[in-house]
Amino acid sequence: MSAVAEQRSAAFATEFNERYIAWTNQLQTGSVGQGQAAVEDTLRRWRQYNAELLAQTDSVLSNNNQLTSLADLISQVNEQRSMLTKLQGEASTRTDQANVPRIINSPYTNILGLRRVFRPSTWNWILAMSVIFGFLALFALVFLVYRVVVTGELVVPKLIMGTQR
Image (tube, rainbow, N blue to C red):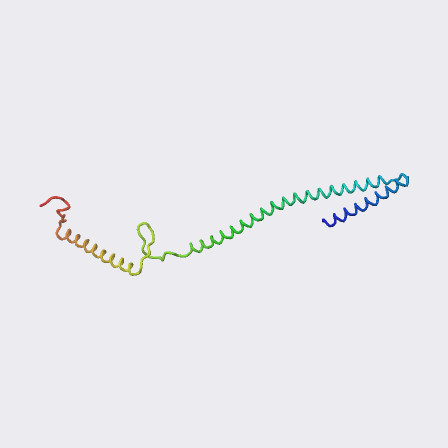
């Protein structure tokens, strides 16, 4: 665009010089012609072209400001994209981590419904102790029922009643 503008300005300058020389020659010879009108026409068109160039320059400068703000917006978009990519990577990592089973299923569940993981040896001891306590409880119940049914009386320990007989 600048090369075309320079060529056109040079053409106006050449046209102006030719018409000005022609007008001065007409004045020196004493003939009154259209020399002044031709020079003024060339100057008017040249000024009009300069005004167009000024308007184009202003447009380019305003577009340059718009391009600067557009470049800022593009850099912000790129930053947001990189942040989004990073967060998506972290989210997929967190999803993968959340899907990994951390607790090995165990048939044991405590009162609150929470699962506990025991080593196999600990699990065997818990099972053995629960079987032993179960037998002891069953033996105590059978003994109590036998004592009530056969002897007909329930023995109340003296320490619980607080009285001595």
